[in-house]
Length: 387
Image (tube, rainbow, N blue to C red; front, side, top):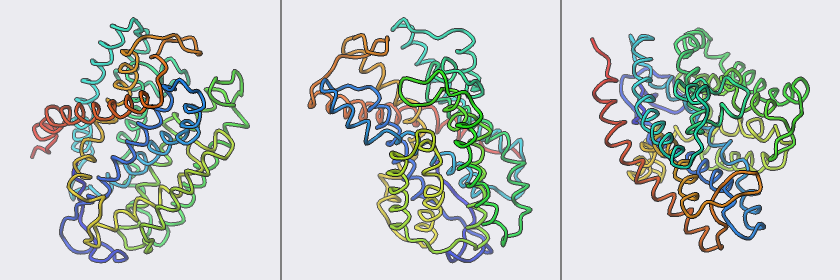
């Protein structure tokens, strides 16, 4: 999806001139975020017969998915604010969002049901219906959050963002430009407090198999829509900061270094802080910094034709990738795993790398098809505002 808005003539000047700036570099960056989520879910499969290799990959990629999702949440607020049109209304906005999300969701939901049925692992009716209507993230229960096409829990969170955007945007538009940074700092601070609340006020038992916390604690900091609304709001504030000329000149290279530093930090802080708190500020700074590439009219690998194309199919890629990984691995030969479930067979180093690369390629092809034959034509046909 092309991201547009009236643009400032200079990076530090408020918007005053009519015109359209395509934020292609942010579109390209979307695919990198989707790729991080792919790497995370690939690592979670533990495909390698040498457990040390699987553990090593997990040690490197252990929070990659969290970072990718947090990036998408902040970016959503930024981009939706950037794309507001004069005279736009809440019904028109909700219409566009519905036709952006629903078609891809319904196609991948149906595909997931078929694959789960073939594997004999269909979810219960309540969980399936919750997934279909994208309300599963409101349940602090893994059987709901992880149902059907499990990555759609994040789309369930985004549904709250879309419903609340007209009101939140209106409220933030009333903030004086000189106060926007104070509000952004306050929202970021609230995000940092989420794991503090979770550790101190939510039950720590029973602990999960993959980390020293209960699922309820993880759900609160990572999947509870109200808490994740903070990142979305931060994105709105940052867009307003740029549009009102209050952004400072942060070099993209420095912003990238800060983001990498935040990622390394997320691998080394107490468990719940690694989900969002360690990276929310670096990611929040990265988005306006990358947007400045296009605002300054510069060329970058991020706004190259290939990167933009990958960014445009990134939503379809995100919805499809875990289905390809899970059921592609299972298709290699169902094998009982140490968690009491069934996955694929242990693979050699070369075999595991080949499988992951093949899954990546297959996901790109399927994402292209979903984008080309479902997402784009439906958006063009139904999402345009009617006069």
